[in-house]
Amino acid sequence: MMPASAALVTGASRGIGRACALRLAKEGFAVAVNYRQGASQAEEVVQEIAAAGGTAFALQGDVAAAGEADRLVREVIGKFARIDVLVNNAGITRDTLVLRMSDEEFDQVLATNLAGAFRLVRAALKPMLRQRYGRIVNISSIAGMVGNPGQANYSAAKAGMLGLTRAVAKEVASRNITVNAIAPGLIDTDMSMEIKGRESLVQSIPLGRAGTPEEVAAAVAFLARPEASYITGVTLPVDGGLTAG
Image (tube, rainbow, N blue to C red; front, side, top):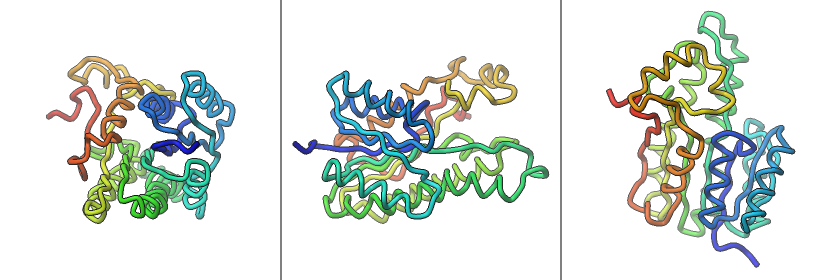
């Protein structure tokens, strides 16, 4: 029996992606749990979803590699016969100051965080256009809104996701497809634990704490629902008020 609705979450073996996969499964979506290297972690997410009565499968693939986006979407369609939600979450960092940043460090981050997202949007839109329905949620960052020192590559990629979100939202709105972005601030993940000056950053957050992956996932789940049908082309900060001004 094919599911009523299906979602693909990239980079879903841990952190924000994991939380998004679990939350969407809780919302009733069959979920493709994409991962690049964390096979055992992805399988744990699948098992947790299954234990709660949901449907999921682990889907290996490097979103930075040419041709992978089309394959990932084909596999989701092959498994679930449809794709209703795409969450572009996969991302990497290669932090250093601009004067020390190599071409490779810049290109690697742009290839995964921006080009990979673009290719997945393009691939997912084909079945969504046929369905005349779809929800695309791009996980950007407040770094793409305000910039972070030592993260010129990451900030550029995440800012690019915001432009991608707005442009595609306008292109496909007439087909009942929405495209929105989430811009997390400081979230308790393995990646954020490596940020220099983390304690002082926490002190600058109006809510006085870091966020959780589950709080980001809740925002994603809202934008993925049919009830969010009149919201498209927007960026929703989930940052405890850090960018409030």
